[in-house]
Structures are given as C-alpha cells and as structure tokens.
Length: 332
Image (cartoon, rainbow, N blue to C red; front, side, top):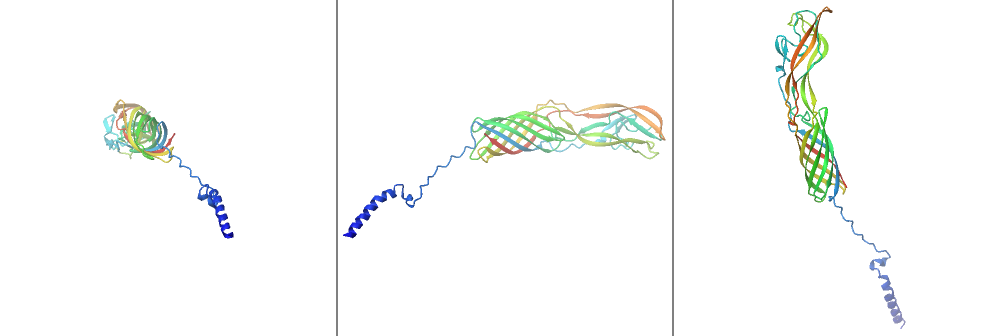
C-alpha cells in the first residue's frame, strides 16, 4: 500500500514539473539559454544607378607611326663662293658648317669667321610627330556619373611623357557597361583636345674650339680654326592644339562595394589641325673673316654665307596612338 502511494505521488510530481521544464523547448533542459540566429545582411549592389566613379590610372602608350626617317645628309648643300658644296663628307671643304667653311684665301696663317648663327635644321627624323619616339608612359584621371546601372558620362584628363616635352589633353566621354556580379565589361568613347608633344629633327651645329684643320700644302693652306661642326638629333616642340577622339574597351572588377580595379585599351585619333608642310628656306648670314699671320692681324673682310634649312611645318598627321591603362576606381 505504501509503494502504491509513493508511486502515485511520483507520477503527480512528474506531471507538475515537466511542463515547466519543457516550456521553452527541450534544449533548455540542460540549463543553457536559447541561441537566436540573426538573418544574414543583404549583399551590396556593386554597380548602381546614380553612381559617381573616380578612376586614377597609369598608361603605356605607343605610336601608330613607328621608326625613324633615314636620309643622306651628304646631299645637303651650302652655297659657297664657287658654287654649292656638300655639308657633310665634302673632300674639298671638310669644315662643313655652312656659315664658317674655309673659302681658301691662300694665306698661311690663322683664319676665323664670326657669325651670329651656327645651327641648321636638316630634316625630320622621327616618323611620329607627337611622342618623338615609338612609345612612352603617362597617366590620367576621369570622373563619371552613371545615371543608370548601364550608362554614364564623364570627363577625362590625360598626360604623356613626350620627348623632352609634355603631351596632355582632356575629353568628354560616354561609357556603356554590362555588370554581372563583381565584373563589368564596358565600352567607352570620347572627344576632346590634345596639346604639346614634339618631333625629332636633325641639326647641323658648330661649337667654338681650337685645332689644326690640315697640314700646310692642302687646299686650305694649313689654316687653323676655332670651330667644330657636328650633327645632333633634337626635338622640336608642338605648340598647336589638335582635336582628339577616343574609342576603347575595358573591364572593371569591384573588390568592395566602393573600390574597384580597372584595365582597358583605347585607340586615340589626333585630327583637326590645319596642314602646314615643311618648307625649305634660304639662310643668309653676314660674318667677318679674320686672317692672322704668326698671330699678327693682317686683314678683316666681310663674308656672306648662305645655306638651305628645313622650316618645320605642323599638322595632325602621324600622331595617332594606342594606350593601355591600368588603375583603381572609387565608387560613391
């Protein structure tokens, strides 16, 4: 009888306590609190409408017209007292400066010529007329506003290291992109301007020195001279603004919602400059011929010298270039 009573008491206690123990689920039976799972935050939209993009990039640019013009400078001539003579490699007048060549007076002594100008342009060397070389480096920045997820407009500024001169410009651009995930391939185009750059030309120069021109008895009587003639290749800078057109394709990758990496290739057309071809002009310089014998001045005579020089022209020809760009984009 006692066992039966105890059994009924135990069952009654179990029915009373069990609902309280399992009120919050069986996991609370061990005394631990329930862990609430929070929903994952939504993934950001990497490419958005009404988005502002700022891109900063470096560039490698290469000219459409590569290489150099090679011409025979020995055909360049200078007008002398007895006709025309070659500027370079002339056997009778090894002093090849068109303004200081020895006219052969027949005196054994020292002869010098004073001239205000001693530099002549012989002709164009570089085929490219923007970089003055085949390729170069540079950089730039552009700002775009995307009024929709797929289309945007902006402005771009670029600068390239032409030979001893800066070539820079700006464009208004239009961009279309097709985003998927973190990637967005795009096409771009623009119109603007470019200024600066240079073209390489070959020059004939003279530097004042001292030395023996030839031994006594040669055609110049063994005169000494204080001039040294040499050729140099130097850039001639462009000082005209030209129109610039651009088309290109590229790809952008968003590292985060607001930072991305971009790479593209653009082809750039330079046009719109009035064509002024190179001209050959005659240079006439007045100098003074000083003749000394054993250091004693004998006679000073006026000397008129002439030479043909290339006057550089300007146009938009031979200035197109390709450009590969790599940079970072900040999106807001």
